[in-house]
Length: 248
Picture 1 (cartoon, rainbow, N blue to C red):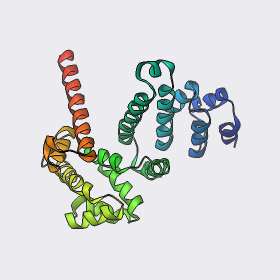
Picture 2: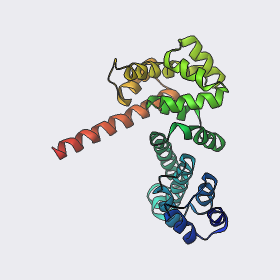
Picture 3: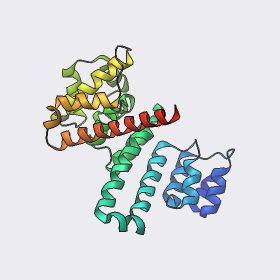
Picture 4: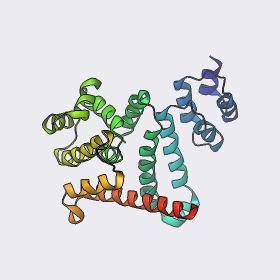
């Protein structure tokens, strides 16, 4: 009761002290209230982020709050202007959200998906990005929520379902027909990776998704999204190689 009272009405310092107490029994709702009330303050935000007990949807909320704080800073506004700062921060939040999924337990997927859905962030482009990155379990949880199908059925279809059955599932989840081909393409590759038949990463998967759309000459929003995913993967891999060379 004391923890929920502090979360609901406590000053930032009291909330930070509560979070720092690893023995305190803090409910998910209390974490959410502290994130909502004081997540824009570095003192509370940093304490929350450092706590392994923090639910994934709260982590996403803090991610957004940090982006909003940075976007509004005088230095960022002077360097970029409001429109570009908004675009850059939104893009950074989307990429960080995909990374956030990696550290999220499957049992927390439903809460995170509902949080993203209510915010309007569970878009087709975000879902395609998660599939390109091989977050197939998260994609499955999103389909369960969006298509109102049983988890068992969705998992079975993702693991070995035929294209027609999968496309019917995608349709019932509200994914436009134009997205089905690239999602199927990515799923087939990640299936082979999971079964040990292939070695592949985001760079190769996104390239093959782009080929599905017609290659580098492909145009439109969908092609632009896949190209950006591929370029990000290229940059990330190049950075990784450079660090490996420097460390050798």
